[in-house]
Image 1 (cartoon, rainbow, N blue to C red):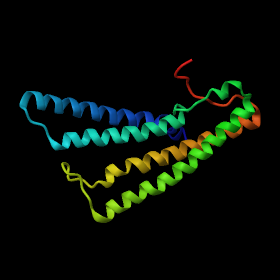
Image 2 (image 1 turned 180 degrees about the vertical axis):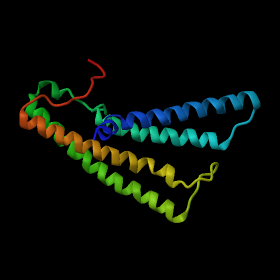
Image 3 (image 1 turned 135 degrees about the horizontal axis):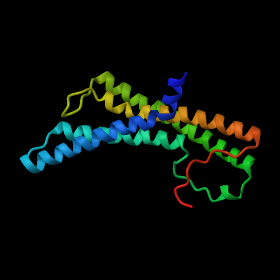
Length: 170
């Protein structure tokens, strides 16, 4: 149970670290190759591109978890704990519906790619591995939205302050 709690707490953080390190190292190698040897590879550009795509979608799920996604929260400063919790619950429900639709349609793209056996130009690896970034990101978002929804319901029931995440600007 302790392992599951650690995975739940740090999964996105570790995945983001892996993809970011892969992106930076590959990009550095490719810049050196291009500048020193006047040669660059196709695979390096693909790894950087697909690492960035995974970074974006896993980062979006991490933003949902930490309530760090962009929002206009001027009204929130004037609301009490219960109306604030209700507003967050409403926002989570809307986002949940959008995420479910996007998850369905993004997975459809993965299935079509798998059906026709499309591969990347440089690596010659199945595009399914790279197209899975979008449904994986939306699946993580759905999971984090369910957690957020349950947390907000508890705050609404208790009348306690709702989790708002860290403020970027004060």
